Amino acid sequence: MKQYDNEISAALEVATRWYESHRNKLGGVNTNVMTSGMAVAELLRNHFPLTAESIKSDKRSQVKGLSGALAKRVLAKYGETRKFTSEGGRTSRGTLEIATSLALALSETLASFSLDKDARNAVADALQAYFVERVQWDYFNKKRLEVVIDPGKPVSAIIADIFDAARARADRPTGAVAQHLVGAKLELRFPNLDVGRDKANTADLQTDRQGDFQLGNTAFHVTMAPAAKLADRARDNIQQGFRPVMLVPETEVAFTRGLFKSEKLDGRVAVQSIESFVGTNIEEMGSFDAASIRAGVARLIRRYNERIGVCESDQSLRIEEPLWMEQFASSTTYEVVKI
Image 1 (cartoon, helix red, strand yellow):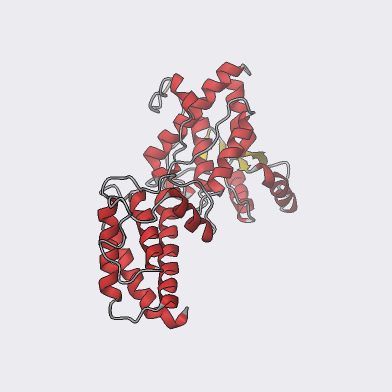
Image 2 (cartoon, one colour):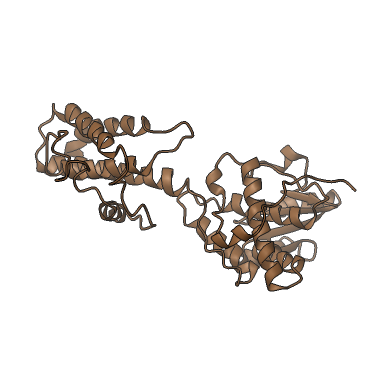
């Protein structure tokens, strides 16, 4: 509410300073910091000033009202329905102290304002919206990609599931995920060739390659959102004596083929879905045997994670390994052996 802009601004400045002070050396923030912020904001609706005593539960050892249910309710209020911590940090060591420091800082800063109930609610809403945003960026977006890797599915369907998980994130890192899945597949299929390991947004010109990947005289371009500029890249490939292969999501195959047809390049450019390009090859390498395909999926996920570890600063792009993968030994580190 506009009439409470000053109060909200002051409270958010305190909350931001408090929150960032709890960021660890690796850049992360514990979930009990996030949930403590939500709980203190909720208490502000009915209590002011907040004191060390007023935020304690009846048992005196926990934060009043702090629970997984509260966190879930606050997240849902702002449209976030992904699964968060079930405890809400209620029993975590140090949570009460963390919450107390925020409560006292807010009370000190807001003491100069006349906070009626409407003002307190406006400030509480703004604070909770801020902490929901922090949960999204520092928890959901920094967790590994959580995907149900079902080895009983066609591998192409597993790749589609991975894309769905990437699309569900606020930052939608599908492009990086697609490129490293393709890279992982190529490394497994051609272990003696230098496939190339680069950050996903590295331009082709910076790598001296004709595409995202180049094997022999074939240039592979990986994109989740095909556009007209692909035709320019294809023409350049052809002029340089390379065979362009465009890898796009299954849902974009028809559009991409139509694009090249309209540019008079149909018959000169191969278009294939990323899902089938990766999936079919993994199944072929597994000799279409269920147990071998299962092992192949495990190798693909691990090789993908290895590429992320080497190429990307955002390690939340890694895929969480399912428990069934524990039976497989870790993949060997990628190293090109020239023959």
